[in-house]
Amino acid sequence: MTILITGGAGFIGSHVIRLFVETYPNYHIVNLDALTYAGNLENLKDIEDRPNYTFVKGDITNEVFINDLFEKYKFDGVIHLAAESHVDRSIKDPLAFVKTNVIGTMILLNAFKNTWKDNFSNKLFYHISTDEVYGTLGRTGLFTEMTSYDPNSPYSASKASSDHFVRAYGETYGMPYAITNCSNNYGQNQFPEKLIPLFINNIINHKPLPVYGDGNYTRDWLYVKDHAVAIDLVFHKGKNKETYNIGGFNEWKNIDLVKLLCQQMDEKLNREKGSSERLITYVKDRPGHDLRYAIDASKINQELGWKPSVTFEEGLNKTIDWYLNNEEWLHSVISGDYKTYYEKQYNN
Ligand code: NAD
Ligand code: TYD
Image (tube, rainbow, N blue to C red):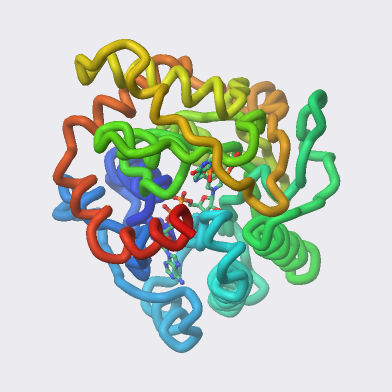
């Protein structure tokens, strides 16, 4: 079986690649990634020579290139993670999100359809999506698979659109598909534009911690390796044309999470208690900021037996340790373009 995993040099993708390459020696895993600012082959250094693994550098929006790639490998399955993934960037440059997330997904769908035409037996197109497509919750309630799509950011609108196209290809052309909508991931190898690694990096460097608005926004956090396990389960055991919500049963208000992070960092860095908390700075809110995300993951739990394996405290602890022990990784990703991004996002 030959499987295409797109976005495999990114945060979640690199964990999925590692899990598949190590667990399934009989599969040929092809990692297709454009190596944008968010892609980093250092994430996969230790497995790059495995015989069942091939890396291909390329852009999913390049139709000719993608068609040639499908012609060459005849992928039995696609696990599609490549995307522009950061909400703040989508506010500044929405079109980039339409290009990769919508048009790139369409180009992959067409290539998969044209490869298998009317015979899709034992084939699967699996789209990795987000709970942000559901929009925002109030103070109570949970997103289920039946919740209507109601995206608020250009990022979530682009992911909602690509989800709809995947579904449409299933209905119209009989293409077997799965979609999972997952909550906020955290863990090692996450680019320090997202809340947790950005704040870890700033604490290390004694820089202000920019909390948007009043900090009373809520997210449901999941350890990235638990997401990768869920993806493996859905790929192998999920029902055709189904969507599954994946979440951590782990809601945190941003400000409470940041305070926990500060406490753990003070201990690990042997700093005076309370010193990291003093770096908290309330800044201008994100436009269209969704108040609360929280996932009801009972479907994947009951049908596929999945549940998170670590508590948030354990996962956060491991995550902080990883960043403290991988300073070189952190330094390499915060040089160059990151500085320009940071200036524009936080110093204007
Ligand atoms: P990421 O930004 O860390 O990685 C994205 C990867 O895609 C990078 O390696 C990048 O080089 C690659 N890429 C971007 N544009 C490309 C293009 N045009 N062609 C080929 N490759 C391209 O993202 P992530 O956080 O790992 O998210 C992966 C997927 O999971 C995304 O589809 C995202 O929407 C979804 N998701 C993320 C989260 C989260 O909390 N991070 C939660 C739920 C769902
Ligand atoms: P983020 O990690 O960007 O994920 P998402 O927007 O996809 O949920 O942000 C998580 C939460 O943290 C969100 O409510 C926005 C907030 N946040 C800040 O308060 N400050 C920051 O600098 C960042 C990046 C996020």
